[in-house]
Every structure is written in structure tokens, then in C-alpha cells.
Picture: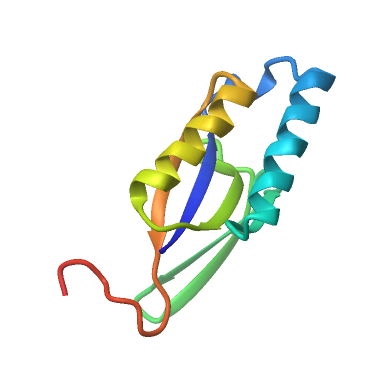
Length: 117
């Protein structure tokens, strides 16, 4: 099962990040990589570009977007056996970085069973 763990910007991203936090996070990422759990990770640019398709017309707008209250600022794509395992890895992440908010969503690909179908 693949899950996307996303970090959202709720305003707490400005908290102080010290060297020990980066060392702990490096060890955590290395552990997950060696175990084959971590498929990809990264931060996302602030703002981005919004694309809206409506009535056959596509509109493109460059950010930042003041109305975006829960912008995704970082992610990790993981492959684990269960949602519970994804939650446990997310808890370990937050124990390292401190205050913040995130979202965990299962990722489906070709041939994957989608719940409810």
C-alpha cells in the first residue's frame, strides 16, 4: 500500500529548526530508505500555479494564493503494509520536527483496488 504523507502550512512552519532536528531527520530518512519504505520525499515551492478547467476553458493563475489556508509544503511517498504503519511513521516524523499539521492519503495506481468500488 502506498501513502502520501503531506505537511501543510498552518503558520507553525516559522518555528526554529536546530541542527539536532536535521540530524535526527537525516537518520529517519536513511532508515526508511534502507528499509525500502520511502519512495520519494521533498519540499514544495511556495505559491505554485493553479489550473482550473470549467466549461471547456482552462485558466492558469500564478500563486501565491492568500486564500489557501492549508497549502501542502512538503511530502513523503511511502510504501507500507497498512494505514496504521503509515500513521506510525508520520507520528515519528512529527516527534522529530515538533508542532505542525499534515495529511495522510492512500495513493492508488493502475490495478490497485479502490475502496468502495
